[in-house]
Image (cartoon, rainbow, N blue to C red; front, side, top):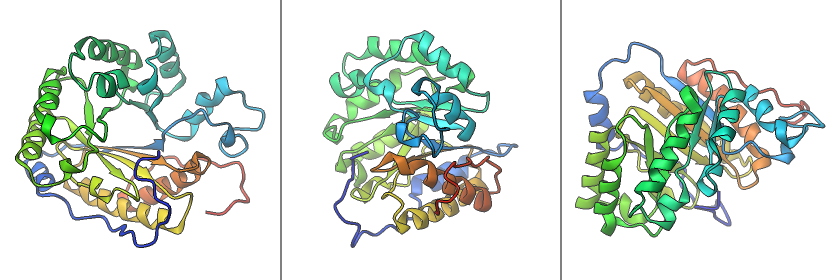
Length: 300
């Protein structure tokens, strides 16, 4: 992920900001769940040849990457559908490869978010949602990412679009234009609508755009896109901080967690993902299976 990419980490404040008041309000109104939260931690893609010998056994063919990936993690941030909506039979095949506890989290097609910019996108949206049903019970939260140019001046467009989505289609929204992270009536109106519709937010933790750490939860789901720095020491301290914050949210009643690891060099993602799983297990009281990496001599 190049969004928020920086040349150096010097001078960057990686401390997580406090929860926004909207998050506090959401938890105050939340009724007890009566069951432990669903926590999903994974990478952004499975088609990585540089994971052969690390996550995939030597000699693994590309067609078998997913079958090995699902043995190691319980979710995937599915960016590939953003660029090309695959036939239903392909999606059904992916779903059949994964176990019942696995969740696919697809990004809305770019024809919806970037080509049409949410206007006159009803047909593409219906097609996208129809195809996503092919995942069955393995469909997690789909996320709608708006372009960096989509500012608060078009708040009405996005509000109309979100209101048109089926209420039973679970989605999260990722905003990128800087104006969405300041005090503004349009911002308040949009986030109030998200609460009303039960649509979650995407929190993006990337070095060069600290404003995207808005810490606003509009539904009892945390969807975090974490961009590391190729196993720099700050990667681990930042994961530690997230585990502590999510542990607090779980205590307050958080229902779902999706935590996705990105790296400038994706070959490092499985290793940091394993660290995240082990750290979340310790601090959040959960028991996710940590992947076994095949280069056992490598250090964290």
